[in-house]
Amino acid sequence: MSQPPGYPPPSGEPQRPSAPQSPPSAAPGAPAPRRRRGLLITSIVLGVVLVLCGGGGTTAYFLIKKVGGSGTATPTAAVDGFLTAVFRNHDVEKANTFVCAESRNKAALGKKIDELRSYEQKYKSPQYSWPTPSVQSHKDKTATLTVPVKITTADERTAEKRLKFVAVDESGWWVCEVGDAG
Image (cartoon, rainbow, N blue to C red; front, side, top):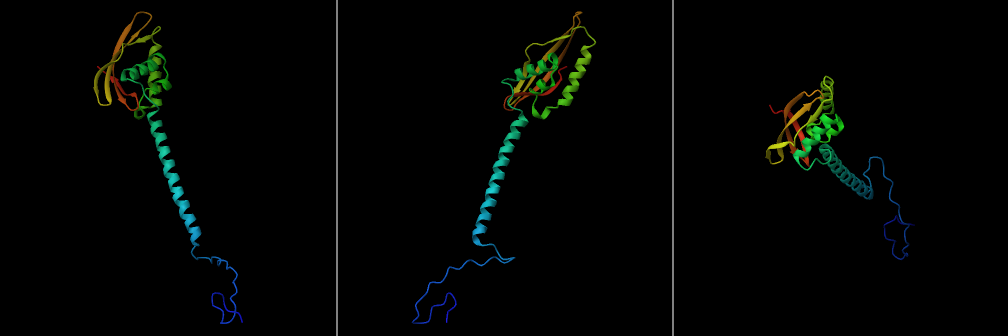
């Protein structure tokens, strides 16, 4: 007579090694075996770490993209570059490389450049000039600059308008505001 596995044999009978038992198959609704649960937890933790690392990398990318790279070394260089791109080159893309991310509006700047072109068509060979922009105030990471922009035509007409710029230092200097200096 054989005994059920796990019970000692009756006295006097030699012990036979029992065959290794395979784990019972999981019935529907039964908890997963411990080994699979550990694998699942490890996978979830690894997934969360990847999402956090990916999110940090993505955030860093967009912060750099928001700033748009690096600005110029001085507020004067930012204003002078902006003036050259707008008045001499009529280049929206180039002008935007001098504008801070918060103020960058390609459509609005394009409209202003189109207005400038329309104005120029009324005159004979207009040429723009300006001296080095002068810094009126400099506080922390903000500088206010003014510059007189002069237009001269081939028939010796001239006009001058003083412009006021606010530049900020965010990984280099950027033009953030342009207005009439009066």
